[in-house]
Image 1 (cartoon, rainbow, N blue to C red):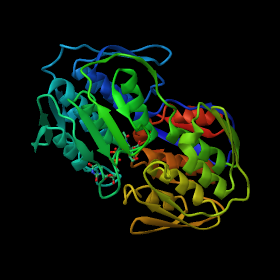
Image 2: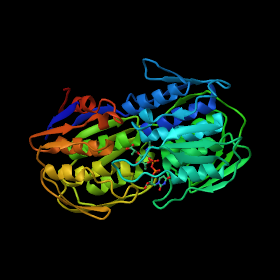
Image 3: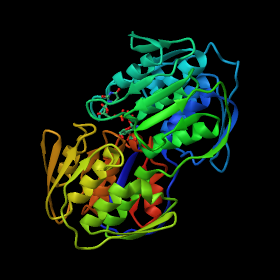
Image 4: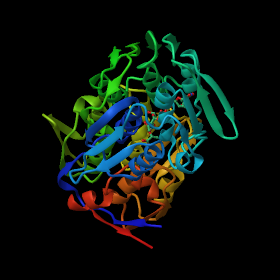
Length: 424
Ligand code: EPZ
């Protein structure tokens, strides 16, 4: 298993280009099941989750080619592969997002059998809202032997609320939307997720011929259509990758410029960085991050978009561990997503968990240690902490990082970090 080793306390400087958004690319790739003919999609990052999604789609009859410039060609053809409707455990267990083939399969092939994704290290991850939405469209759904089996004749438009105990659901909205675009009649999704990645999926589907109104609002109105066709499309930049690099600049008190950023997708992140004392200058599709030696402690609460993303919580925690004073981070999306806390404590951080809040007393410095990654964003938080820790930090189980960040260590190294990957 590969490791990352970081020698801390090097200031970052320079420019880095942000890739297309993983969490937009995954459901958009799955939505290609609905389309007749080839789609050429630009900006899909070269990461392990995309490889997993490609395997799942190939298993369902998709033809997938990656060109040298990173563009993907994905082809499904109407009338072919009607008998292929299973996403098996061996593939689904690698990545929860594979659940987003459920809606497209059900809509297009009338049948879907998808391995139950189960819980994971960031806490309970039920799919009751996905199932509720699909049932409302007329699907018969059973869960047995670890699989969700869904069947329907042509789905029928209806009115559905996707409000759950912790707010709405991102992939649940994607699944219900992709099922509804070819349903008979009109579907109204109340309490739809508004995340930019959900908007990107809706824009992709509309380009392919769907009729989705209310994109970016919490009420989507979808007129079912009979056919969708392959399109050329470019995925939005990854706001979480951008936010992670912003904190890399901030935590090392550096001066870095991110290219290919949609700062309007990062309002909550940028506002909070400014409250802390980081200078953020947005200019066209670039964002310049200038760190300072005088930062202020802050409180933050993760919420669905446009609130502070839960996927930025671990990264902010790393930063706040180095900011003097008491900061409180409250997690309202995945209430026990704190697996990075014991690892940050190993690096000298002072953090106490109380229910779904982390109380952080910032210190002037962290110290390098051996730590272990539990999930993608926890890993990002540990890398950021390693960039400013005194001494050497060794990070194990970085396969989690490779799921969502393309060549993270190479790109940080180009900015001046002393970081390397060690392969066993
Ligand atoms: C998506 O997961 C993202 N994954 C996650 O990013 C992200 O953390 C999350 O949205 C929240 O923004 C992808 O897009 C691939 P949810 P998703 O359904 O859709 C509860 C990363 O690191 N809930 O919006 O699975 C759930 O327990 C990943 O890139 C139900 O109660 O998240 C949670 O508390 C990690 N019932 C809340 O809703 C359901 O049926 C939000 O989860 C579904 C969810």
